[in-house]
Image (cartoon, rainbow, N blue to C red; front, side, top):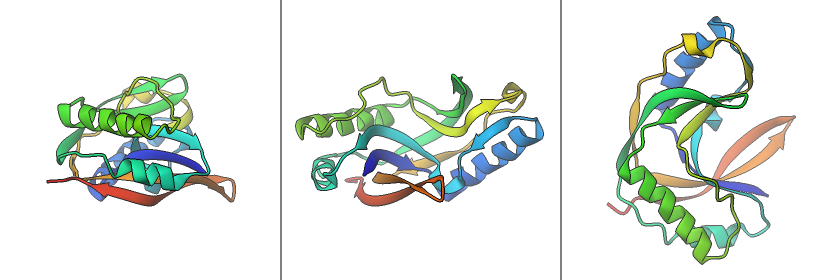
Length: 167
């Protein structure tokens, strides 16, 4: 199964992103828009593994206090459009703890530099810079282990485990 560890967006943040997506479409931005239920911030991409139990066990050692997370700007990685997340100590510390927990359990994952963002459009093309970045923030109190699978040709993400903040 294909797994990743993420922060899921609150309903209010998802609503804000929906408004931005509508504005992007009106501006003529084409591409594969990410379904609302799939919006998240990836902390660690694990990829294909048959040992979800080991990941769940590793996640139990993740210790974090609740913190605020807010949108900041929009940008691209090649043809992928994202909404950036303001860097903050709580978020960076959480991402580091997730990596340390996976390393300690000898679980393989993508070690690329953590750049907090929410992917909104894949294979994007069009005048996205005409649309302002959304405003919004939420309290992060939970980290989720997500399973990614294809259903009817579409990517579906499902939470299979979660760790709550300690405070």
